[in-house]
Image 1 (cartoon, rainbow, N blue to C red):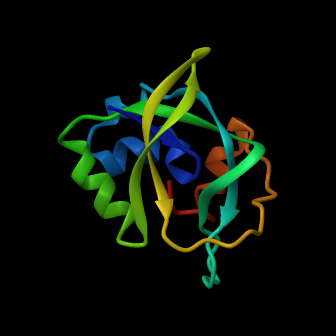
Image 2 (cartoon, rainbow, N blue to C red):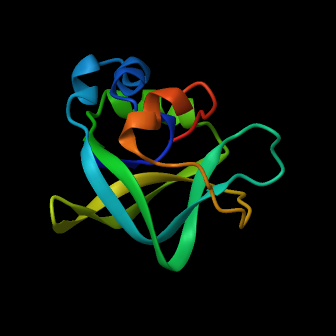
Length: 130
């Protein structure tokens, strides 16, 4: 199963650690989620991200192929504040069905930090989810 990553799990090392299999981090590749925007989670002082539907926006992220054994570990990491959904994302120039964790409560405050892959490791200490 492919999952769309837009937060701290974009870091392949962290993804492999959380999933319990470092090989999963090696499956990461760029992806785009059209019609969504990355936002802050509402009512939390911490810097946690989610996505929400938003026409004319695109979330730049990654997809990774996860195993059946990794999925419960990732669900536990995301916690009960997030729900797992299936959405379409652009992967390798094709539309693919992917899984994504979306927070149950979000704000409309757009996530303004750069999403450049080179900054993923720096964001890791400040961001926790997906």
